[in-house]
Length: 66
Image (tube, rainbow, N blue to C red; front, side, top):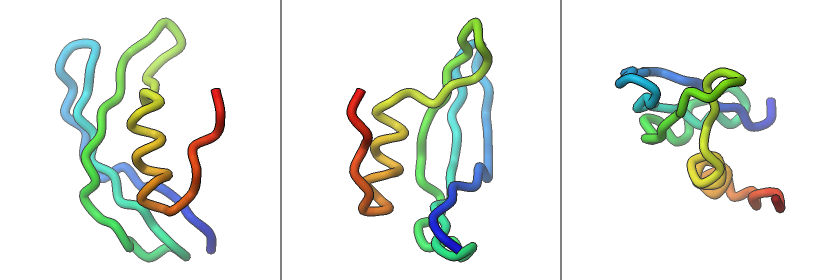
C-alpha cells in the first residue's frame, strides 16, 4: 500500500502545465482532483517544490528540507 500520487489530467500551456492529481492511500484515491502545476526545464518536466509540499501536506507528511 502506502501513499502514491496519480496524475489524472494534464493541460500543457507552453513551458507550463496545469496538472490534476489523485492522492492515493493503499491504492485508493483518498484525495482526488488536487490541482497543481509542472514546468518544463532543461532536464524535463518538474513539479515545483510548493506543489510537491502541498501534496505531501494533504498526505499529512512533512515536506523534506531543501
